[in-house]
Length: 220
Image 1: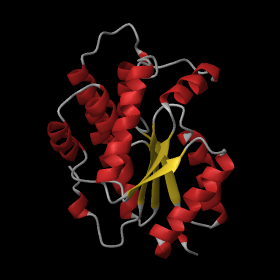
Image 2: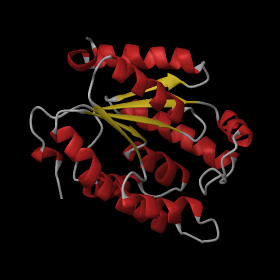
Image 3: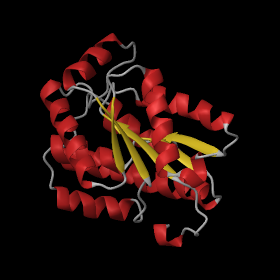
Image 4: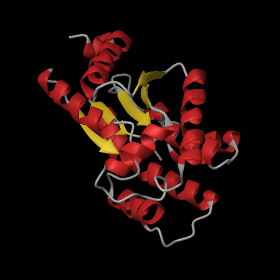
């Protein structure tokens, strides 16, 4: 497995957009992609779980197969299996080329959903995630924060079919939100952004954060 220590000194920056379902991550990934193109910066966008054949197959099982009764521990291991192949096949090659990698979700989601919301042991989650990711972590987490009630309202208005996590209820999503906020407070590489603002304002805040936190890459 590729380890983060194997990446060269000229590795590209690794960005992760995080937040509960309905927080606007997909919209911001799209806006940020357009901005990166306008700056002539080389980048790759992906989502997790997914972006590999194995990861998409696992996504179909763990999120979309609603007829399956999947225990929390099994759910965790499936997500981590998808992360392992995601890191090896998608993330590391991009970073090795010195390019920007932007993902919709990464390891913080595991802590928020499987740790705080499902109640699995956080110390064990950190250990298992470190194994699955080969010790690789995002350089910067951009966390879009919205109330659980707003998450529910946005999902109800969306046309897409709800997945297993989105059907878990408001109490579950409230635990997810509190998990994100608690984890973000403990991490130096996480910035919480008010997700109730308009997409345009959120986008401007993200650009401000990137240029401030990574001026060598984005302050051009």
